[in-house]
Length: 292
Image 1 (tube, rainbow, N blue to C red):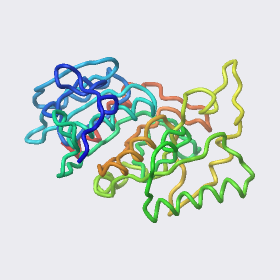
Image 2 (cartoon, rainbow, N blue to C red):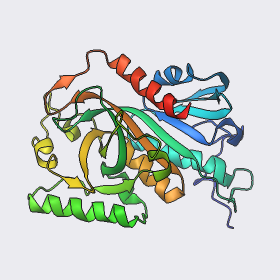
Image 3 (cartoon, rainbow, N blue to C red):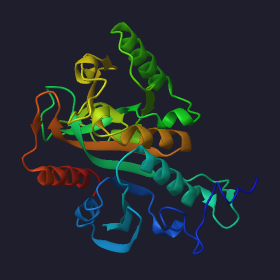
Image 4 (cartoon, one colour):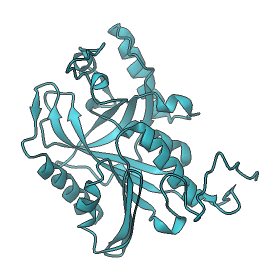
């Protein structure tokens, strides 16, 4: 196996990976991804013990145990550009020998679980709902730079969604990308507490999510256009800024990924959670009821 170039795999002088500042022993195989750095402490208060905490740039990482289960929680910051760094560097920690700079023969599969906040794009999905995404559709462009090999069901989503856009003569500014959640992880989050659906990922918070303050969006009718889409009994449920990249990179690199979101806003009705911090706690508690 050819040695990776220094400019491709950047290792710090202390042996840690470039942006995250982590070594292989610092992370568990189950990694909880949160956007807000303050949410790390909200997750780790459910840990029985914490063995490691580090911050480098906006990336905060804590590893500890819940009972006998070792888990890591990491703040990624906002957006798919950060997810591109996080997933690639976490993968390198377990699947590349950082000293020899060669890919390991034995592959390690990580479990990535996003705990995030999101906006509903359907009137029938109220604030405080918990969404477990079966698929991610990227309105962000990141995965266009990667060589993807989609599953048959994800290819079906791709074909159906593109046909749907054509049928309503809707030209989206970015070619959508498609990826799927891990069936292994998704199967754990079923039942009345969870809404299954398709999560869309935007490249920004304002115009890309149909928000206008002074700068106008070129897609002011985005939510009207996508509300009618259905695939495999699932609707497009919510819009946020990370899921498509987490799913897409995990699919390519052989990891398991799931995105769990609590709905803070309903973009169709204009409702917003009166107590958004309590909604975060609701999602975290629901996660540990299953995984704790």
